[in-house]
Image 1 (cartoon, rainbow, N blue to C red):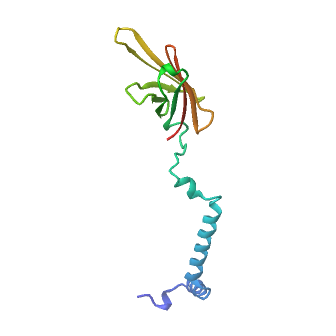
Image 2 (cartoon, rainbow, N blue to C red; image 1 turned 90 degrees about the vertical axis):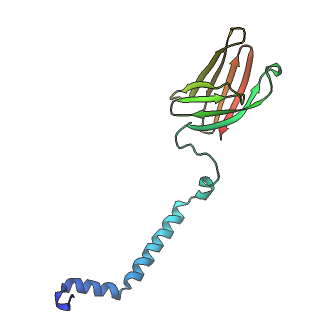
Image 3 (spheres, helix red, strand yellow; image 1 turned 60 degrees about the vertical axis):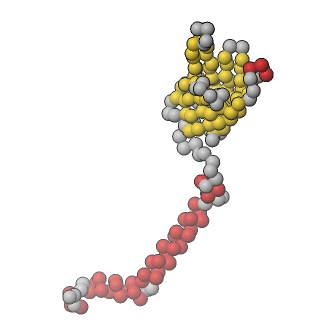
Length: 159
């Protein structure tokens, strides 16, 4: 058991002053005030709108999933489809026709995307489809697909 004679007089005086000045109530009030001030100051606009919107944020450049229309420039090349692209650190996979054609390619440091899918056709002819695109901002990728005489315009958005 600690007696009054065991307590350092300077410590005892500081503790007594702390108690007289409101002690714990003052510390709690300061902490609440600090938290409230930093919360209000940190929310320029409504931060929750951006974080809870379901919107995909571009934390890692172009990396992520992208989707959008693949539109033929000539009606004899088929109908408009919905393309899906997944981008990694330096490469991508693009399924332009919702099927088995997946174009593998690379992304360079200037946000240029280039890729090719090649296979042998039914009569042993070589068939290929190429994609070239770029992104000038973090919200859209624009590009073109080409296979033989057919061309398609591609516009992808984060999805």
